[in-house]
Image 1 (cartoon, rainbow over the protein chains, first blue to last red):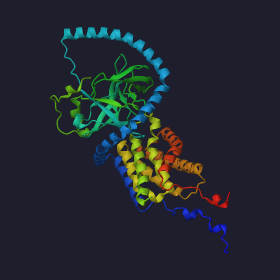
Image 2 (image 1 turned 45 degrees about the vertical axis):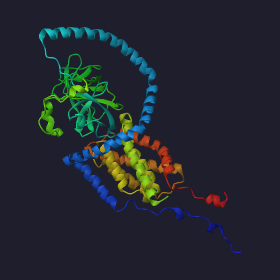
Image 3 (image 1 turned 135 degrees about the vertical axis):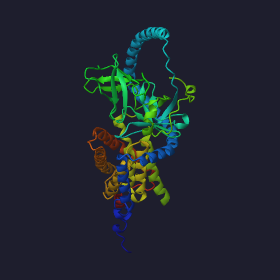
Length: 308
Length: 171
């Protein structure tokens, strides 16, 4: 009988391991070079890059919308857990806020009545109503570089670059790019966001500047004017890009560069309203936003979409 | 499992996680940084176990998709994912004792990758980037790895198993 030793049955690790592969094939250096080249072109802000980027975004936006449908229950579950976690403190906060608001409601009615009387006496022109369309956020930025969101309305829904965007709580940002069925919204916390505002009951003028952090800062405050924590911040309408009086947030810290806590929760916002605000200032900033043609001043049928 | 399926599943898993990375989940700003690292978990899993089943263009395209859809600098995440791919393929040479060892290898690769990501971000803006979001992202990705590795293992047509030496020895 032939001896069959144990070693003949023993499998060595190298017998079933896959062959050693060096880190990448011939394509890898080419792809690395491409990545670095694209990064440099992005840094130089080459116009071709933004054109290609937007074309790809247009193609992918239906896919993103489709993917969100089966994942929505997951999002809702996460929101429910978060809400339940903060329920008790949130209830207490809402009770206190409700009491304060009741007091303000009476004052607001009195002021409204006085304003109507004064307006009638002075025969002042009424503000025109601003139409809007409601959009859903389908993607947002996740990195250190930008704070932006993508919404599922675009040129087919009459959205144009420059239009302000609001949530139920306040200003969120403005539209900076549009496609046929999608638009990119630059959030007010983005480093490129600059919004003329007024602060507090004295309407102190400033510019709200984002820095990619959660609290944008007030800049260009006059040296003799001070703000206090808790002061309300709203758009001043200066420059004509945003209408006057859109709520933004409250002053968080009254330092030499005060920070502002936005009313809108920019991380969890799901539905946004895009205001059809056709400001004459858009004509001046149209070239940088890629708008072509002169701004149309006639009615575009926006009032049928609703009013602010 | 056919060769086509063996290549399709890794690419599909990386693509799905890249799309998940750009969806709005309502996470706080510092927590949102972890999302682009989810595709790296899949890249590391496949490249460290079956490097011949994950082509180099898959991390490149996934990174480009994340760049375009998150409106970040084009080329950033494709470069990071390619670097991660290279690290993971080298990790393939390290024979780990088991799941804990593979987790440790992933954590080491992740630390190198996040350091590279922070460095490239700082270089891009020519100033030091905030390190806390990157640190939080690394921590969360490291903790999430076992969950995703289990899911990917269930999709793996040829999961690596321990040697059956002890069984043959009767031990």
